[in-house]
Length: 207
Ligand code: MD3
Ligand code: FE
Image 1 (tube, rainbow, N blue to C red):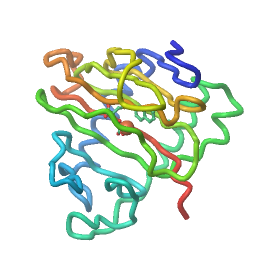
Image 2 (tube, rainbow, N blue to C red):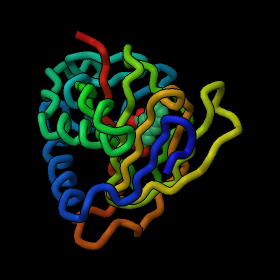
Image 3 (tube, protein in one colour):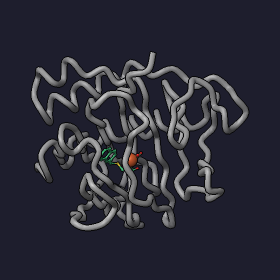
Image 4 (cartoon, rainbow, N blue to C red):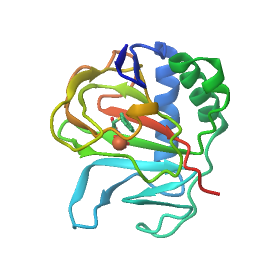
């Protein structure tokens, strides 16, 4: 369950009903004030993943309260249900003390179709070293967890399946990571969804 210090994987943390409910919420969030879209990087490349933010709008290398890259609408508020889920997740991974001091204020919902991938990167837009909580829904993927120094080896490849929780904190908070590919056809029956969704919760440290 512990991939590296601070990197805790809890397979099947969400039960099927919780998974189905969270998929439903993701659908709602995807059609909020800032619609789900593929982010264009400063280099001009367009990400294959589509995403929508809550609380704070994620842009490459910064957060904003407004969707500065897509029309400028105010981002939807960070929902209470994700604050509770985040605290429960950190408690499950690290224990009660860490969980009760976790105050996530931004969520990023990523949608992967069969062809989507995410290159190796660090998450460094946040101004705190509070953990990142990751929840996977729908189709499984091959996730690559690297090291803190660079995007090269050593790394570990692990499958993330629907309902899995991953918490990245402590010495793993700034590790490089990415998604090599999804595994089409692996979404659980009855979840009402074929692709892959990943919800990450972050504590930005922004006012
Ligand atoms: C390790 N998302 O949104 S989740 C991202 O599946 C992102 O959509 C991937 O990387 C996804 O930034 C991977 C696992 C994850 C998320 C955040 C991390 C691993 C992390 C932050 C620090 C270290
Ligand atoms: Fe990331």
